[in-house]
Image 1: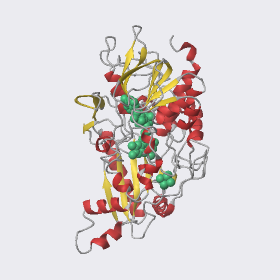
Image 2 (image 1 turned 45 degrees about the vertical axis):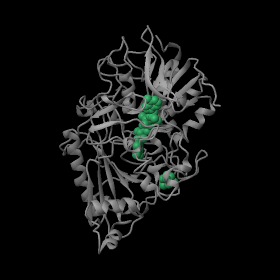
Image 3 (image 1 turned 180 degrees about the horizontal axis):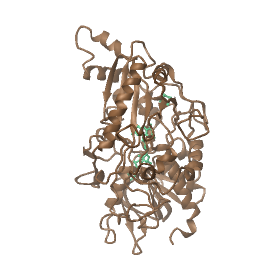
Image 4 (image 1 turned 90 degrees about the vertical axis):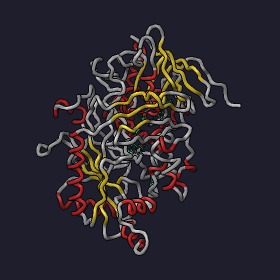
Amino acid sequence: MGEAVNFEPADVLIIGAGASGATAAWNLAETKMRIVCLEQGDWTNPSEYPSSGRDWETRAQSDFSINPNRRAQPGDYPVNDADSPIKIANFNGVGGGTVLYAGHYPRFHPSDFRVKTLDGVGDDWPIDYATLEPFYAENDRITGVSGLSGDPAYPSKQSLMPPLPMGKSGQTLARGFNDLGWHWWPSDSAIATQPYAGRDKCINLGACLHGCAQGAKASTDITYWPEAIRAGVELRTWCRVKKIEVDDAGMASGVVYFDADGDEQFQPAHVVIMACNGVGTPRILLNSTSERFPDGIANTSGLVGKNLMLHPYASIQGIFEDELDGYRGPHDSIWSQEFYETGEDRDFLRGFTYEFVRGRGAVATALTGVHSGRIPWGAGHHAAYRRLFNRIAGMVSICEDLPEEHNTVTLDPHLTDVHGIPAPKMTYTISENSQKMLDFSIDRASEALRAAGALDLIVESPIAGGGWHLMGTARMGTDPARSVVNEWGRSHDVRNLFVVDGSVFVTSAGVNPTRTIQTLALYISDQIKKRLTNLFD
Ligand SMILES: Cc1cc2nc3c(=O)[nH]c(=O)nc-3n(C[C@H](O)[C@H](O)[C@H](O)COP(=O)(O)OP(=O)(O)OC[C@H]3O[C@@H](n4cnc5c(N)ncnc54)[C@H](O)[C@@H]3O)c2cc1C
Ligand code: SF4
């Protein structure tokens, strides 16, 4: 028989056990408050990750797909992404997206918090880099970040572990950048290159996007969660939240959720923290309608679900004469921020990072070869395959996406999950600015790859399956008419409701968001600790 569930009011109720939920839970644990986290998925056993078996590439097309509509596991919910050229990618379970992420782990630049002032676009954040710096450092320590300090294009930071090996592919690409006189540097990565905090070091198997069975990649199920649970946080899995209830005073009173048996339950709470990501959080806020909040809780501004930002990506890969190191090793090795800040000579504002990626596995190489017409059937098939396998390397450009109100997450009027909760619908178009940035990044990357000796190029733009960075749908700001949460993450409308995930981003920067999401989760939960006595004033 399972343990009886304690439905006494939680002091703090966190919804979602992914990157941000784990981080906030860990930080709040020291208060000794009663903290409960509800997660719709379950723990994943690393020994069952695709990376522990020979069929790792094919499982990435089925039960470990990055697309929840294809994966369709019990912890998943459908997402209608038909009206977006970039399709949803996520993971629903303890650790959230960090179970599948690549572990690219850059910080924002100070300029990213002031794009309105600098470039007259988007909005400035209500907080700055200096405010977040101590929280970046704290998150780096718990997560375990590898990298090399001294990067001239990047804010200063302390490196905790040596960088990942560049390998032959990194060295080859770096030569191309050197020829052109462009910046490159070893990447920051949430992958341990030495034994770290009880975790083993990376052994370069190269299946990071399918769960790291080695435990070298810092997913929050093996970083923050074990410590938070030891400190007394209760993590309840297979609990899918349907809506947040409000009391007569307009405060959040708790949440209605479906438990593992599909029964509806009510968990009362004094404080509610949303950590369901940039799609899952607006979904639940919009579904939390009441007499007081007919358009959804925390939505007086009408901005819940608006300003969805996704980071359009281009992938530019070169095919080389000589054998490189293929897929063996983590995705990241080096990056370039040559085009990160706005350039006066360009026809778009803001910029992007190039992240160099290693080659593809055997199945991915075959699919790429067949689909692009490079591997014929019949005579020459094997020879053509050999010309590609272990000979592909290149980069992705991760482009800063600016906030636009017409890019939205709404509730689908027809589609629901297995519990009957409306599914989210993404409506998204790539802006003219982002399209110009993508095109420019392809042209420059092509130059660099040719300079590095590439014989031929394979380009995909945008990466159609690349909706893995979900930001902006409950933005932070000081003006309640133009933002959903205030400068410390609290809803302008509901004083005991907070958001800690990527929804609060004001702008998206030209880098992966998770290090900043977790840093913000530390910062916001720190504000909760500091203001505990007057949270409800
Ligand atoms: C394939 C892939 C590669 C990526 N690579 C990188 C990378 O290299 N670098 C990087 O910075 N980022 C990367 N990301 C993105 C990264 O995973 C996310 O930015 C990060 O996980 C977001 O954190 P979060 O806390 O906002 O949400 P998540 O980590 O998505 O966590 C949200 C959690 O909430 C739960 N939840 C949602 N709705 C409910 C509900 N109604 N009730 C209960 N629980 C609910 C979900 O099950 C999930 O566990 C990648 C993502 C993917 C999918
Ligand atoms: S390459 Fe390293 S981080 Fe990636 S799955 Fe293998 S051991 Fe883990």
